[in-house]
Length: 347
Image (tube, rainbow, N blue to C red; front, side, top):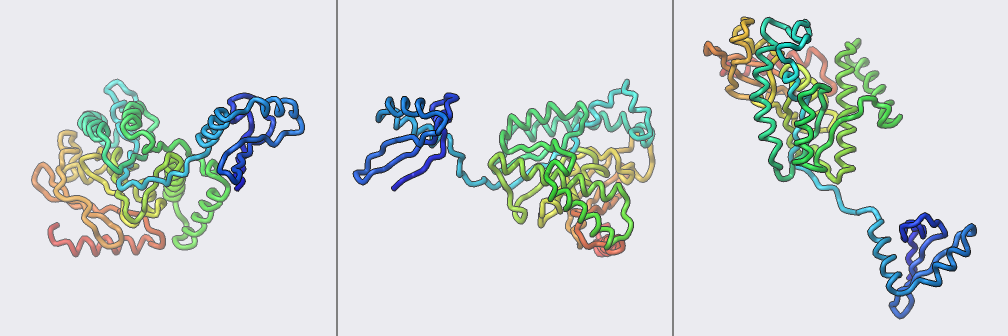
């Protein structure tokens, strides 16, 4: 039996010589010998190498060829994946940071200072959570572009190694023309169902799908995969009513998950939620002081119910999309929320 190995002499010997390919011949006696198929441009070099090959060199060449071949190891499935979304932004918002004076950050009086202080507790939780590797677990990262998360990302990489994928691509064209065309089709399909869609909404979907596809490809390249039916996704980062909500509901669909990505109130900065500002008051002392009673209660249409208690003892309910499912119109989604609210007798 003859086995072809398309390796150049330079590849095998670790030199720059490119004289031909190596062919291993197994004769009828079970022995193995090596010979070269010479390149027309390097006949003298090939003949010289043939003259010095012996049994020991043949063994070395065989080992080298085997080592150079790509691994056929199957992808290892993960049972749980943490999705880190723009974590620890508020660490950068120190009292002297001029961003504190902008409406984008200071949505209500005291928001920046309260959220900044709240962040230190979250930092401790994140570092504790990511410093010990959990079996069958990986981490996906959406970077914030601010100063708070780079050290945390480095810790995650040290802990989870190749089971980490960081989204570094924003342009869908970087994932190939077919993927970019698919996003265009998504836009047309959504407009055919819903009519005019705001750029903010469709843009969030396009970013989410791009990140999801890049993270999936990176995870596969690192030797891991996940079953969208069985995997558990848990989101943490920022913020409760913004990125850690919006991108999560879109990415769950982009990943093809059958269960929405879980949000845990204790792992997300709730800086943007007006409902959590204690009975609607905007005093900084009341904001972010609600405690969670129950969370991620399944409702119809992949909606999730969260119940909080204010410092005064009031129970407050929030309904969030667990996953942004195709085919839902705005009216259908609102009706599902209303039915969920009426059917839950504890609120």
